[in-house]
Length: 270
Image (cartoon, rainbow, N blue to C red):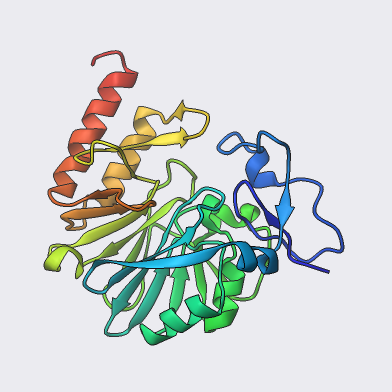
């Protein structure tokens, strides 16, 4: 029995004797099946072929990413607070060097993930650090490896520790969430957004999509829902899901400006 991992999305599945027949996450129109068909690997195999790298994004915020790039290629963020650390947007690879680095940085008090494309090996991380995983209840169907560590919260916001708050934005996924970090950006506040708010190549802007690989847009009402969800929170910076995808300043204004541009475009008013 092994916990097989989908090589296209990086999601780890419940233990089986043989690889699963299919990956529901990749079969959904918000993702895709690999061009060479469905392929599987294991954590033990990845530990031999890949390694993680660590970069300081700003004080008390460390990025953890995998090299060479794996599956969707996102990097996780370790948010350090006086009351404990939050691992945001998990990655597939967990190995002994990574555990040593994270433990030296204060460990992990909790894990939270923006949406199912980054669930990856979340249970491995949770068990290694004895940490709960906070996912929005709307996404329970997408959990491929159920575990007692997973806490499916309901509602629109969930306060955590250290001033952190989970915010359900919807959009890309109905339970898509971001986290507000009030101490980020030198105390001006930061959002860690995954790709619920996608930091685009022109990093003065974000964008919004139902499916990124298949280029299916969101409706104007769903975009406005995202903007409304983050409006009550102060933030000057947004960290997206990949290295370098950061709106460094003026992020709250950038969200409003980006939403206006997007809605005008899909209405044919651009």
